[in-house]
Amino acid sequence: MSGEAGDATTPVALLRARVADFVAARDWAQFHAPKNLAMALACEAAELMEHYLWVDAAESARVTDDPARRQRIEAEVADVGICLLNLCNVLGIDLASAVTHKLGEADAKYPADKVRGQAKKYDEY
Amino acid sequence: MSGEAGDATTPVALLRARVADFVAARDWAQFHAPKNLAMALACEAAELMEHYLWVDAAESARVTDDPARRQRIEAEVADVGICLLNLCNVLGIDLASAVTHKLGEADAKYPADKVRGQAKKYDEY
Amino acid sequence: MSGEAGDATTPVALLRARVADFVAARDWAQFHAPKNLAMALACEAAELMEHYLWVDAAESARVTDDPARRQRIEAEVADVGICLLNLCNVLGIDLASAVTHKLGEADAKYPADKVRGQAKKYDEY
Amino acid sequence: MSGEAGDATTPVALLRARVADFVAARDWAQFHAPKNLAMALACEAAELMEHYLWVDAAESARVTDDPARRQRIEAEVADVGICLLNLCNVLGIDLASAVTHKLGEADAKYPADKVRGQAKKYDEY
Image 1 (spheres, rainbow over the protein chains, first blue to last red):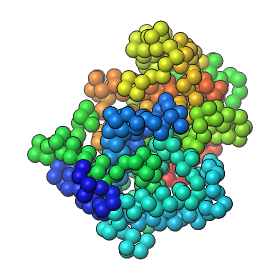
Image 2 (image 1 turned 180 degrees about the vertical axis):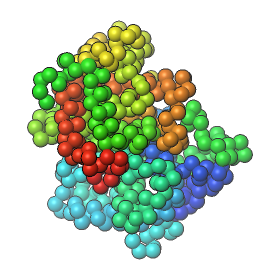
Image 3 (image 1 turned 90 degrees about the vertical axis):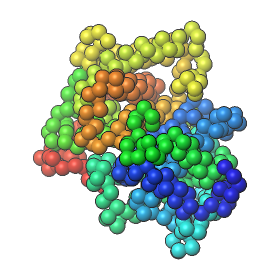
Image 4 (image 1 turned 30 degrees about the vertical axis):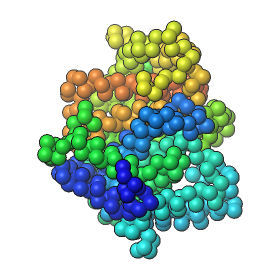
């Protein structure tokens, strides 16, 4: 985890390439149908969520104060990221473009000056 | 979605900053306890998975052949990405480092020359 | 929803039979591989969870005070139940036995006099 | 797991009472806000789904042929059931009524003679 691998200088494409290389070296693409990857992503997201099951929202910000726990949560975050990047590779989706596009839509849907400080209503979610 | 927003040249940190700006403009950080973001991430992952519910694995690779469907799936992928980046912002996790570190661990755990072409066993998962 | 359909007098097997009849009338068993039903169950659980996304734990007990909201949450609970009963039908699992057996195991694992009033620790979860 | 605990003769209310007794003996109701139980349910559903991650739909019907695997899957099914019954207890939802009501709605929405043998379309899902 040297500094040069960090978010500041790592293009999304480089992370995608690392995931692609890992998969290719094992010839695992044959198992990575979009259906299976979407399932795996949901499983990893659930494992991450498990860390926050019995704590209250306010308390949840302090879970990662414990170094051992932080390490495990970082590993779960990484697992979700790897599944997502893998899925982008398989589906040919440009993640940066998709995220930027979606933020633009959300920006129009939830105008900052109208929704400031208000939780999204369920019905609008 | 201009070319310059693409994965090839966009550092992860820039995507994170866009998500942070979106949240800050709405003063929504108050709702984004890790517990809530982990739940939101799991919900978005489930919405993505829904697109692949009744198709078989082989068939699932063709779902995105339909342009309208592809657009919706890209939007779900973006939602998962936005939740994940938001969580990284809130927890102070460097995603590139976490992914790279986890791939290194997985590389040691599943040596390419031993597992090539074999699905991960459930018990090892 | 007449009284005689209620939990007090309805054996689990009768609910299972209703789900089985619904599926058989549509010839839908062909789509209900365990893999697909497990995915559908996870999707329905996520939809239920969405109702509780932005509220705090304490506040979550009051979400169903709103009659319209209660109705939607009951529908999501039903969807989860239907998927679970469907899966029991397909896998030939006796739900009452499985639940009773698991409660017996949990009773031994978490002795009442030792864990009273303490949240399960994550590591023990 | 004696025969008299089986689905054929066990009313849903009896299962609910067993779950309620288990919780009461540990004074755990304080942790069981609907938000937390909905999260726990989603986590348990994901654990069940994990058993079917890398197999194809057709192959998934044979996973439970292995007795050890069947036992673990039954335990996951039970965990989902326990969370669901717990949530019904906390929210005061009659599961049999909710399931019966929902099946009635689905019966009207998907008329048997029109949808027979056709997978639900995603858009109708």
